[in-house]
Every structure is written in C-alpha cells, then in structure tokens.
Image 1 (cartoon, rainbow, N blue to C red):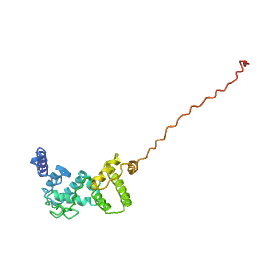
Image 2: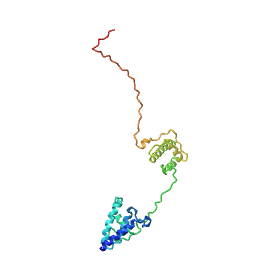
Image 3: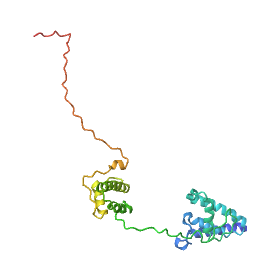
Image 4: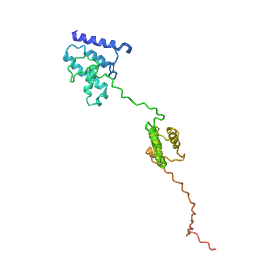
Length: 235
C-alpha cells in the first residue's frame, strides 16, 4: 500500500470517527449555513502540505460551498464572499493562492453601531406616533369649521391605518372612539359621522343591492280558436 493510500485511509477513518461524535463534543460551527462537513473539509485543507494541491482543493471546496448556500449567489460579488467565508471558517489560517486577498481578521465580525431607535409611548401602534402630534396641531386651530374638516380627514386616515393592520372590517364608531381617546378626550365627533367606506379603502368592488322587482300579475288573454272539425254553437 502506497503512502498516498495510507493517508486516504487515515483521513477516511478520521471522518468516520467525526461522524460518531455528539454535537457537544465537536468544534463550534463558525458559519452554520454551510454545515459541519464543509468545516471538516476546510480543516482538512490545512493538512495538505503541497501548496498547489491545497489551492486546487480549496477551489473545489468553494464550489461545494456555493451549492450548500445558494442564497449567496443573489449578490454580485458572491464568489468573493465565498472565498472570504473560506478563510473565516479556517480561522484565517488557510494559506492558498486564491483569486482574492484574504480578509483581515476581525474586520468582518465587527458589529455595527446601534442606530439609536427612538422609543415612544404609543397607545395604538397601528395609528403611529405622528397621529398624536397632528391632533395637537388641530387643537391649536381656532376656526371650528376648519377643525371639523381636519378631524374628519384625520378619522378617515385612522380608518385606513386600522385596515392596514386588520384587513377585515372596522366599525366607524370604533375609529371615532379611538380618536376621542388619542385626543385626550378633547375631541368628539357625532356618532352618525360617515367615514370613507371599507370597500373603497381595500379596493373591493361595492355590491349594490337592487330592489326586488314586483311581478305584476298579467291577465292571460285566452284567444278562442275555432275548431273546423266542430260546428260553432249559436246562441
């Protein structure tokens, strides 16, 4: 048995022993999307002494990685990303002649800074934060008619926002009640206020029920047909 065959048998036995281990006994997966076998193959690459053979095997492993993680292909530079992932999984220890320079250690794993989301105390999340601000602006308007028009427009917008959250239906009284609560119980609208229709908001065809037509009883006009085979009776 040649030395190469002995190495192949040894590698095969090692892989079989690796498959018998529990996950808790194995090394932690560096990039879990590629699975355990890819990580084992990359660790085996670093054991290949010949640089040309190691580079050739690395190209093969990258092609397998592309099949194991096809969503990487959605980016334009997916080949570059695959080679970066190859070096990351090898803990930046793999020395091959790849088509790209290996990434610097720690550059890719740096977490981005927090964008600092604003936290607001929103009672009704589906209406959003600015609904309360608009109500405060309406409160500053002294003209009663103008304020009523703006309140009606705001109530219609609240109904649209509600139906974006719940695509079924909503009672107009519920919207008017929420408007009353959001305004701090300052604004009230008549209970018979008609808001924009749900069908119009959801772009549903509006079914118009036509009144049932009353059938008029028509008198059937019976025409007497003379029978030539019978003589007509004379009064």
